[in-house]
Amino acid sequence: MAHPEPVTDGDFKEKVIDSSTPVLVDFWADWCGPCKMVAPIVDELAEEFDGKVKFAKVDVDTNPQTSLSFGIRSIPSLLVFKDGKVVDQVVGAVPKAVLKKRLEEAL
Image (cartoon, rainbow, N blue to C red; front, side, top):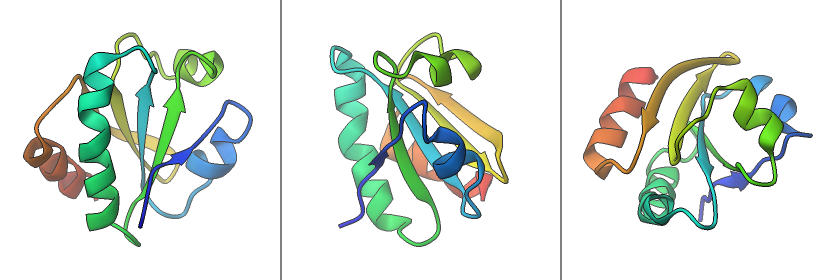
């Protein structure tokens, strides 16, 4: 089972920026309703894209530095990183088909 890996302010650079594989990062919080709606979709995509894309989750409450540095103002925010740079961003709860299409385009 491929699952999004929790990432912190401390290891974000190592796990996301320095990754040779594209990474989808889910910025979320425990109290966020729409985040809970997006989580199972992200889990399903992690399965489908296993080996092609890494998936990570950043809790904005416990990792404010990373959230600030990428200008995360509303959650859920899903950022796709490729070669250490943001190549796409989706804000809010979106259907799986939309997220999958954006991810495929980013690759």
